[in-house]
Image 1 (cartoon, rainbow, N blue to C red):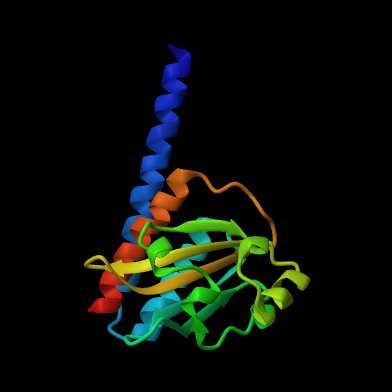
Image 2 (image 1 turned 120 degrees about the vertical axis):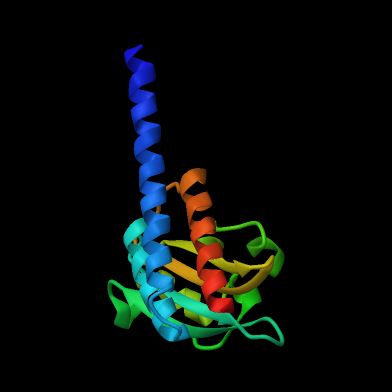
Length: 172
C-alpha cells in the first residue's frame, strides 16, 4: 500500500510539473506578437525546464529545408556552435522531426565543421524539439548539454507538446 501511495504521489508530482510547464509556456508565447521575442522567451523557459545548458531557436525557411537562426540562449552562449543558416539535413530529417522531440549524443549528429567544433568544446548531448502547427514543422529548438544523460520518454513527450504550443504561436 505504501509503495502504491508513493507511486501515485510521484505521478501527481510529474503531472503537476507538466501542467505548470505548459501554463508557463502559454504565458510566455502569448505575451508578444514579435517572433524573436516569442522564441527568446520560449527558449529561456524550455532550457529552464529541461536542465540543458544552452540552445538555439530556428525557423524553417518556407521554401527549402534550411533553418534560420532566431534566438540563442544559455550557458557559455559565446561558445555555442555558430550555426548560421543550416540545412535541416545537418541535424536530422523532416520525417524524424514529425515524430516529436529527439534526444541524441552529439557524436551521432552528421559530420560538419560546426559540430566538430562543438564536440571539441565539450558539448555532449543534443535535443531537437520540432515547432509544429497543423502537422507542419515550422522550426526547431536545438538544446545542448555538456553532460550526456538518458532522456526519459515522458520528458521528450512534454518537450514535443511544448514544441507544438510554440509552433502555434510561430504560425500566428
